[in-house]
Image (cartoon, rainbow over all chains, first blue to last red; front, top):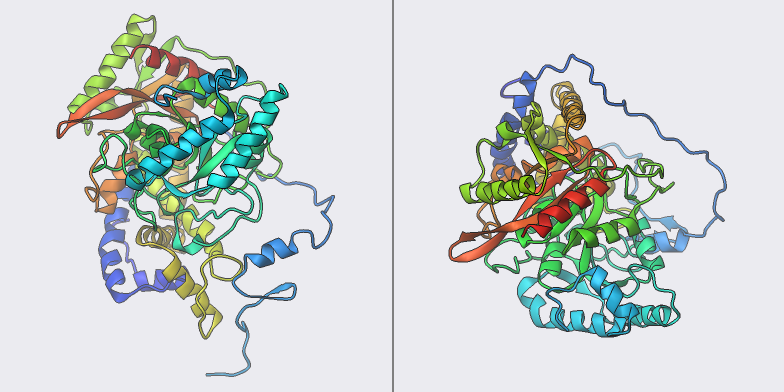
Length: 98
Length: 470
């Protein structure tokens, strides 16, 4: 895995992050440099199964709910825009085709 | 009141003996902050009025004979730990005006003991960095030399304790963020066993790595603060069950010699060898050990951590809380809010994390790193079959000057000795091991001790022996 193609603009879109052309140019240098550094792990043999415990899911029963609305005001107060008991967002779906 | 030698343990005795009141103690720290913090900039906000009220309440508890270990003890809290109603910004423009809707579990535990909250301390944005230079609100300075960094990311907390602006502090450690600033500021810093302290109410960076822990003047104080904040928490699914921790073991110490063969400043290595010789003279057996995969710690970390960062920070989108930019479409609201809210290092790690998780590269990077991480974990487990503690310098060098590590990779190398500990989930402590001279100034350096999971008692025991040989 040498010289992976790093498309900074595409990654920024995936990460929902607007970045300037100047920063794209800078990251096009920096990200591959970091990747060249971390690539040394490719040479490690990892086919042997380590003895340490595997990760496992932690679940809890969905029970004893708190009284409805107890935290509504507190959480809405933190929102940039709220209307009654709702957080206001821009329209997500649109009929109009561009 | 001489604060330079004051510890939590001593203040407890003094307060309970009514030598001075909790209000006197808090006022003394507030005066120190007023006099010195414009130069050090350890704090992002000081809570003068509420601190005095908390101190008065503490004095009532003390008068009633109901004092607990931290009653009336003035503490500084890193800016990524929630206190209900208080701003918790993680030193980011994104959360500059965010007021916490609830208390972190550690906050609740400190409140229950009647501790005093002096203020919130500066840090690298979202705990990403080793110098506080990534703070959106300007860096903190090292109290030993104001032209140098205090380390990071918990640099404000370390500078507060070292500068006598708080008796002790809480920080968080994802790859060294408590131990490295503690070392560079000449104090003690503890990274606890993963799951020993609840992460509920800690602004998440790398969830499989993050731990809250104390920054204090002594190992005894670290133990007092650790005892106050530890314990199982049903609100944190990675919290460990409460069991009796193993007793301290302190006979055999392992040194991973081949890992220390290069890259360490000669005088830092000399301080380390002196400490080792002193421990040997006081009865320890020192053994050379091999941790063959330790050298892969940093590359593994710089895959796993940004992957978790890009995932955790996805929640900050300008919709439910935090910085929000109005725009024509919801996609633009996200992208512009995040562009304005996040600083350059945060953006860099989000892009890096997005890459290592992206389709086509996740196997070669993220999953491979997870597999190597297991090997590092296994290396530690195997080593701890033969030794009680593993020791090494906390950092390769003392505090550096501002701007000295402008290249991201050179800053990442600052964490070479601390990140393997977080990857393995084991606890470690940094205790002072003397000073080295740079440009005519004596700068502190740290001695790192690593113990097996839940081995904090071993860290305190060996740490106390390191302290007593100063």
